[in-house]
Image (cartoon, rainbow, N blue to C red; front, side, top):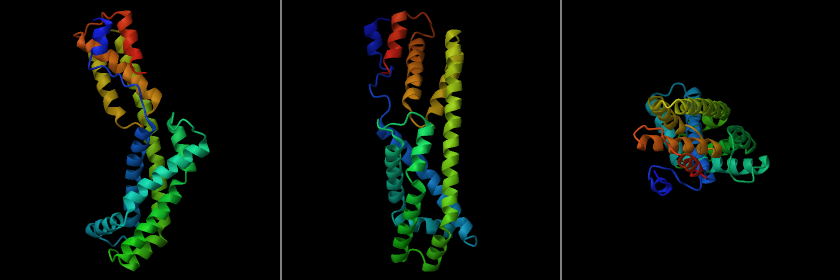
Length: 242
């Protein structure tokens, strides 16, 4: 396979921008939004234990109609932006999960969630969607919700660290199989890498490493599992991620 053919290979990932801050922000808004929503759910159930499932759903729907989701999205983004500035992340992108943890904590995410809960409850109560007594119970017991949110966010970051650890393990396994010319083993680990990558915050170095593997994997696969690759092909496959 010539260099020209290699460059034209549509299976090779040649994106110049490996990770953007927009991608990271979108991932965090989605993942943190889910755990905050779970914290709200658990908090309502704890504060209003006599409510049946339909009642819990109705209250949650009323809070969401009050602008909870939109407010949470804004609170998360504000916490990320402020956290980056006070943490000294001037490139706009996180380089590891520890930076994200510090930025989110320093960005005041819990205070933001607290304000959004008050705002959404007020709106839902004013619109007659939630009785005042229930709204007041939730507001007075808001710390139950916020404690759940805090715990869920911490758990989410623990899951992120665990996912990255597993991803590192799978990439190292892939490299070992590649060096042993074991394509079946490569395929198995490559599948694990692709699956686990969906759970991980896109970090520049992590994504670069995975894309190098992806390019080399596709080279061998398109060569019918033949590892007889030229030095130039291998070097080019590794450079195409930059």
